[in-house]
Image (cartoon, rainbow, N blue to C red; front, side, top):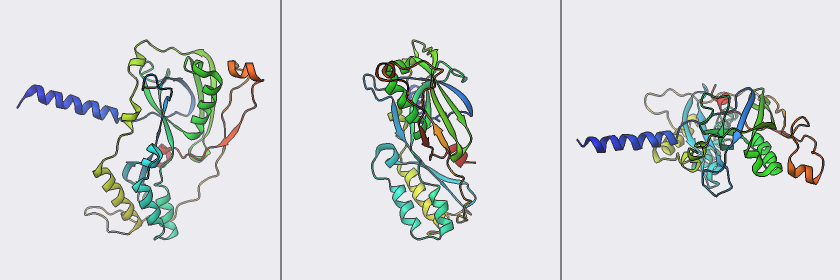
Length: 273
């Protein structure tokens, strides 16, 4: 055995696994966030679209997790198609279970989290469409200065009742010189598709739908009727008067009133409970 080749192989595999590590999410309460620029160098796009299918059985146990190519790359997704086809062949209770396997649209960002255990290391923050729209409002008002100050994102509630407030902060961002050399490659992170993963996801959809027998050693039952979901709450995403006015807004008009949007993105961690 060639020891040097073995170690090189192990190192490459470790790096590949690190690229496909876990994202971080906003914790309840106040979150200090520092936006980082694009991992692509001169490219201005600092975010990456992403989505995953969490396919669960009637006991709410995850049977398969697979990337949604529609949410991630805006191309047809075989798992989405399988879910749609299966939903036409089952009863209402099972249809509700399959509905939970649809992928939510989320956005990935390179950020620094000053209050985390790794405040000076870029981390991949996963946010819902509502939070992402709030961040876009701030970047649209402040331009590149939005990357030079801390942002405050407050999270209250759970699931569809979660309320977010996205605000600029008067505190300047503390970005170590080497942080920009350690940006996570989000294009690499979302490349999680595989033939085996897709096969497992498609079989899991059919099994949960009761269209095929569960694989040997599995006793996954069909999905029961799901409880009604609570009504969605209003989500606020706008600068506050107590925070500095953006240069764009100051030149054009007084700060706009807070805008309200509805958060229809269920938190993935709540779905897994």
